Image 1 (cartoon, chains in turn cyan, yellow):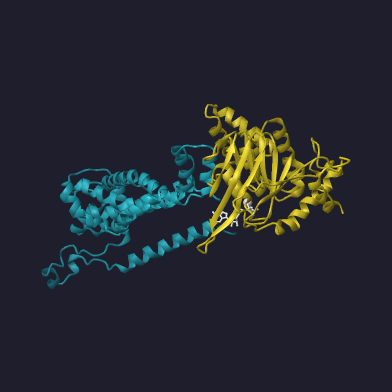
Image 2 (tube, helix red, strand yellow; image 1 turned 90 degrees about the horizontal axis):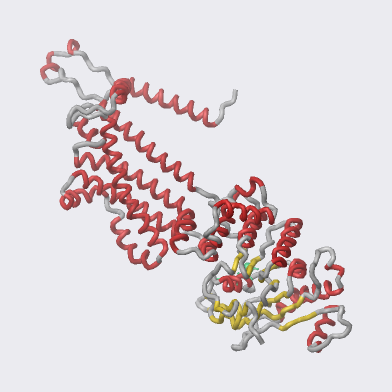
Length: 276
Length: 303
Ligand SMILES: Nc1ncnc2c1ncn2[C@@H]1O[C@H](COP(=O)(O)OP(=O)(O)OP(=O)(O)O)[C@@H](O)[C@H]1O
Ligand SMILES: [Mg+2]
């Protein structure tokens, strides 16, 4: 029997996962029960549940428990994982959408006009390398609202790749294609939408994909700072509770959501791609 | 004398030569094209044919000089001047059909989608593209098919002036023949004026009323304007039997092979460079009127 490349890869993935989980499980020393401990250990606090790295079986149990009821809400410090992720996604998408609203038109302008490019380039070059979290104190001070500050941080971190890629894509549109629009007497707006936008779309979407990835990285850190809700806050909160099982479970969830966001943009990228 | 339909007056194009100086592609080129005329331009690669065409299309500004169409100065591109670009210039994200529809929609903004589609399909069929091929993207088409889409896009818009930059360059001999016939059919049925660049002498003789000959660059000139004294309708198998065919053909070969080099590189000194009219007609018993000028050329051709 011959297997296709995909089948072989899938089998290998599963084997790697199983081996990894087994190694992890085996590496964790079992917790001693109370009776096994010496007097000394009991006196020095060893009797308290020790915060060790949990084995995968525990994490899986946690995942089952959480995912079977993801949207429960039992007060500010006890919300389901679904609610926490929902908050994070809401913040990311809001900040991201605002960034797109600014970056796409501005990028178009910069790409079309060498003057605008030259004029705005120094600002972009200085602002772009700033870690988005460095804006947080300033945002908190000016906006006076932690929720809006988190969204602002997402805004500021997702704007740059979109802006730069849009400008780059628009500036790189082949003059032949623009000439086609010109010989057909298309107005500026029509040219922008029927020729330049589709021509630059692959580059623009690539920028948007990079942006959503960065935004998802940043939201976790931002929520650890501002607190209250969100997956970042959840991780931090569970760490403070010394509930490492939840921490590991939420780390995995962060990865899964990030992957889903990325593959959504991957699909979009394939939809607008064209071969020359 | 009334101005021709398309009048090119003292057209000069200079480009930076990359070493800090300038390179003159052509200088003070002056010629006209009558309404409904089919003109081919022949010249070696790099002499400036595409440059002239871009200026005629309004896509490029000449260094100096003007182009007038219908008495109005050409400034910027227009739907009245349809262009088939040397590199097809199809939009790669649109299917063949959508590429043609793109042009038809621009020309006829009021048309319904069904009408636009029908009109586009008609012109694609005219250049031999039918069935599922028209729903493919340019990257999935052969070079010749792409070129035909580009031709269909230009023809479908009925521009007053059709500018064709080596439109049949990527076609095999057979398709080339069919499309040449289509072009002749479309052209004779309309009042369209055609200005076409080609490298193919036989194609030029088959299609053109007049052939403009360019010398080599830099400082290229439109040196001669050769009338094709073969009556229409022409047919590729019959024209070769016409007594003028080989005389004209030899003249063109001579020019491209030898004289295009000899005549090149002469600065204009500011004078308008009009092409010399050459009329070769072996069916006329004796050359009349201005024949003194043509005689030596005739000899050069026939001996
Ligand atoms: N934008 C430009 N900048 C500098 N030089 C140019 C530019 N466009 C064309 N040239 C030069 O002008 C000359 C004429 O170019 P053009 O494309 O008109 O040639 P052509 O006659 O169409 O040749 P071919 O038959 O190979 O298409 C060439 O020497 C070319 O290098
Ligand atoms: Mg050319």
